[in-house]
Image (cartoon, rainbow, N blue to C red; front, side, top):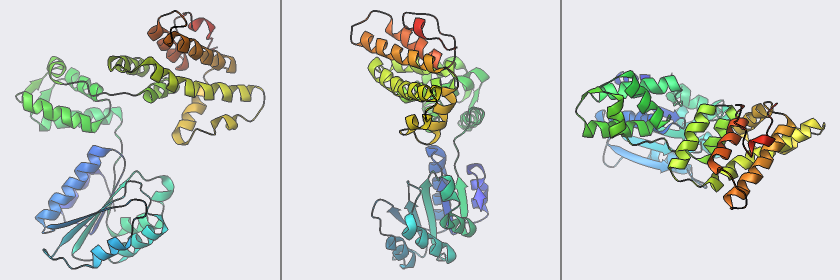
Length: 346
């Protein structure tokens, strides 16, 4: 039976299921779902707890043994199975199906499975667990949901944030719910409950939006110019060297230039994507339609110039040139500069 993190607490008050499967890669919600289940389990007499960590070579008979063993200290036992890879393999799938077919009456099994791909969600072991117990899928929140989440947590902590304070705090944590919870806890410790303004947030909250160069090029490939500017400013503020940024940018521009050139001359462009997997492949494909093969080649030549600037072999404003390159990738008209003169996105 499917449950969401928001409905789990009310569901637990009606009684415990024999099995809980928690899947997804948003850490705060997954962690809090586990906390809620453990708290209710303790309240209902599950005072013994065993934790099994699924790693390479894991012996699935350990779960069978724990399920069959009589508790030495309590009548009820909580078994937590941590399976971050989300794939138990054939042997593990068989054991999980057998457990779901006949859950031991005095055991509670909680499985932390990480993110499950589409084929895994359709597997027999997931269907068996879902039928026998509760499956909680933890999804990453979109911007509107994140704003609502931050507002609810602030109000639970006793604050009455105005819209600007709410927007500012949400923007600063950049979708990281764990960071949001930590910053709200910090606010609770250093400020009295009550009204909360944007100035209060600025004074009390450290900027928790930590970026890396790969997020920067992804934002450019998506075409989100505002995010490009914000991430680049964040990277500069954190002291990330331009060489690290340029490496990530030039890596994808090399792929895009190769892909577009092959496509332009009628060759198989897919060969250029052999090192690109999953969602990033779709990101590259969408970005490739934004510019011509000549434009992508010009942007790659711009990377060569920026590399020479980093090494002190060419003159120019490195940060401005890098920004213009990224804005061009994003599809924004870049201000013409020494680097930008050769980049024609048409």
